[in-house]
Image (cartoon, rainbow, N blue to C red; front, side):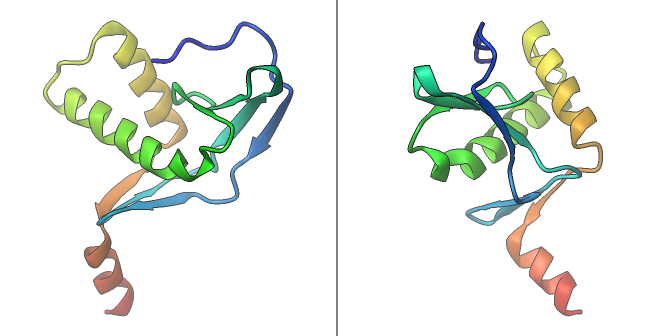
Length: 113
């Protein structure tokens, strides 16, 4: 998990989407994630996800969230989370209690049937 910044964020915003598509995967969240901006550092973080990125890397949000979810989910399934990863997984799974990760073609097939 990325270390949280010690100072308070300059601003906090709600991401305006709950579904994130990367390749053939769609991560569908229960709640819209929050972004904390740290202007002096020229960085922002996805709150409770342990992901921080530089300004200008907004296009990486979906990829990083799907990657984080898949990594932690896979480790949780194998019961191989470290203590730090377990704490992250608890936060992510609580804020996304009914999260769904599915293949894009399956989602489109269900929507059209």
